[in-house]
Image 1 (cartoon, one colour):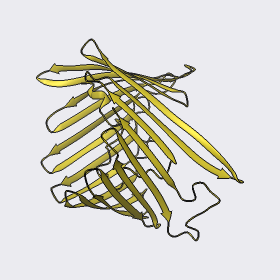
Image 2 (cartoon, one colour):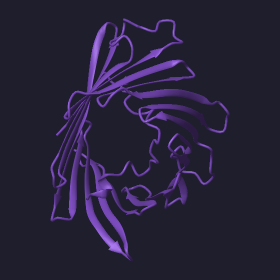
Image 3 (cartoon, one colour):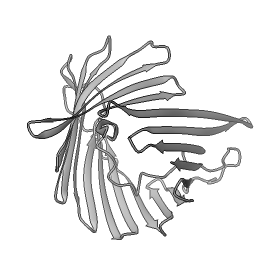
Image 4 (cartoon, rainbow, N blue to C red):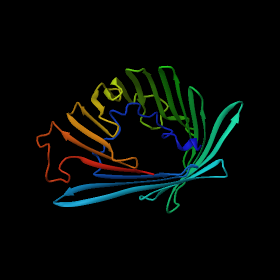
Length: 309
């Protein structure tokens, strides 16, 4: 089942509200995603981003991409190879599931390096998936650096969910990360409060980024959301409000605006079962020149094409 490859990044508690996060592709001019899978768990993923910048009348184009190949072997294990254009390489081994004391545990290990083999980052860990609880633990070893132990718990009981991520520098006995999430959801509303630390070694807990989000589900096709965020101990909150509408089975439109009057719009259209096109743009409504023709594109605009087989 390769459960370790289905996880979000282990240091993340996720983004429960997709009204304000997913599909806003205006930051990159073009994005291409290709995904293919087999019936026995094999996968091929490829993602390419094309960014543009214009200076002194000259257009510069930058391409970044990454590829992933995943395949099972010996009916129990799964291997994944990842490489980016920047030279980063990752080898991941899912070691399968084992029943211990009547509970199912998953084990994995991976190695991060680059094409020059000049650095190595070794990780090994375990995952537990219960009916109401998910628990993940990982030990990270980097030659010449301190080992880091990371543990994440996520629990959902009825309408209430909560979780935490903690990373400990085992040499200095200092916390690198101490994140927490608490939320409530029902058929009409969802509210959650999340704390994200600065990911720096510390022996004194400090306030990181606090994010409070409230969502209202008007019906199965319409969602509204409000997010208030504050970074650090000084009270300087920012806010974002957004809405999402599923027009039909193929088309979804959404928009959000923040306290700086940055308006972001996005639409996602399923051309067919294999191809999905997403378009997004952003308008800085508080700027004197909302459209700047000295740049390309003149407003932040992006297209994303997803292919699935």
